[in-house]
Amino acid sequence: MIKIVKDVDLYDEINKYDIILVGTNIYGYMSNGFQRKIMLNYPFVQEKNLETKYGDENKLGTILECKSQDKPVFVLCYIYKDPFKKRAKKDYLSYESLENCIKLINIIYKDKKIGCTFLGTSEFDGNGDKEKVLGILLENTSNVVLTIYDYKQLSRHDELKKIRETEIKLKEVDADAYYEAVKKRKEDAEERFKNNGHARY
Image 1 (tube, rainbow, N blue to C red):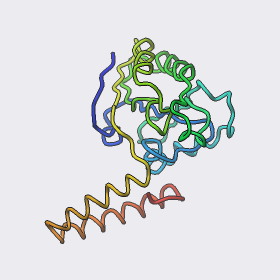
Image 2: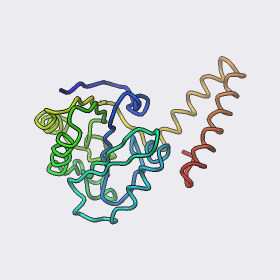
Image 3: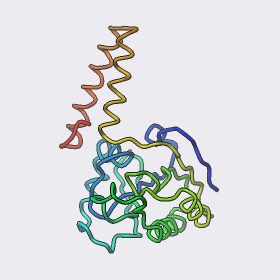
Image 4: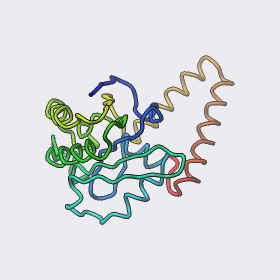
């Protein structure tokens, strides 16, 4: 069974699911979009990711379960190879790898409630064709309940820009609320840095 949720960020609804799928590359980079939010806020996922061999093409089509006590369960799906040339490539998703990952998930996580982005279709995880990806997901998820979040993922730069624009609008109507919002953002960023050890945003 597949359900599609439009224009909602999966990050805000992670706790609704037994398993969260994250499409990623074989080089260990989780630098933009949904991947980055997971890397920043759930550092155990990136720690597990970095235990795998850098640039190993054998990872394509495989999955990696990432668990930590009292945290959501994430499953990394290795579905594309080269993050360095993605801007020059219209479509750099490995459809075969995506299909292999989904087949594994359908077996291993039978009857689980699973959430994911529209895997492989963001500019950050493959820039693939949505119709082809949806076909793969429909054909290979008979044993799970899968909810796909179809929304535009943002780069780190655009995420920060969006936050700042929201703060400026708030300042125009309520200065006190603006200063509280900025204070909380900075406090959250420091806590995030303390947890992941390398980045605030």
